[in-house]
Amino acid sequence: MEKARRVTTVEQLYTVDGVGPCELVRGQLVRMPPAGGEHGRVAFNLARELGVHVKARGLGTVYAAETGFVLGRNPDTVRAPDVAFIRAERRGETATARFIPGAPDLAVEVLSTHDTHRSLAAKAADWLAAGARLLWVVDPEARTVTVHRPGAEPLVLGEDERLDGDDVVPGFRLPVPPPHPPCVRAGRTVSSRGHSPPAGMPVVAGLRPVGTTCVFPSSTYGGMPCDKPRLSSS
Image (cartoon, one colour):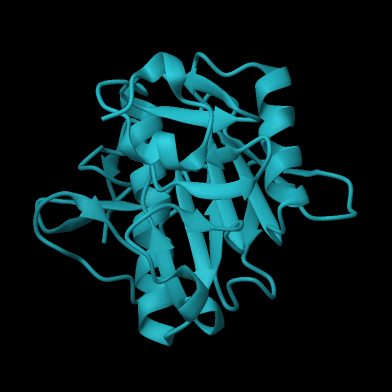
């Protein structure tokens, strides 16, 4: 195995031992501390929703966090997004056990406490310059998603808006997020503000979300109750 202090190339990074999560940025090894709980839940939620959508339609492949993508050579750059998607037409060029050459069609970066505006700007520039068609930068604290596309100004999506896969992940849409999602508890429908749910909404025993999920799982997923739920009259 290579020593961490000597890592400057893609090949060395693939064989290095004992450095933990890291990226290679223009020949420099950049270590990344483990992410926090909210970061992990948001990243998993997005990966799951993308995975279900992509598999059902045969659109391509979704990759989990820490998958390495080779974005540059001489000096070498390997970035690892929190979630990535590559369309089915590219399957031949990405079938490898090593780092994947080139950028994914969609890269997702979920902000962590150690991220800075400078580091995020550098990541966004690297993804787009290497050929990514779409980049989502998710901010769990601000509850926003910034959408980046080549040659376009970044678009910030907030509450009551919808994240859209556009032509990159056709048909994929996810709210960011609904302000008061409906839940169900003990076999009876619950509304987060005590309002009756729409007619025909399914009632499920136990506690779990119904209807459409959203980007941020703290309000709809992971067994989390809605904000001060009250049983409706229905």
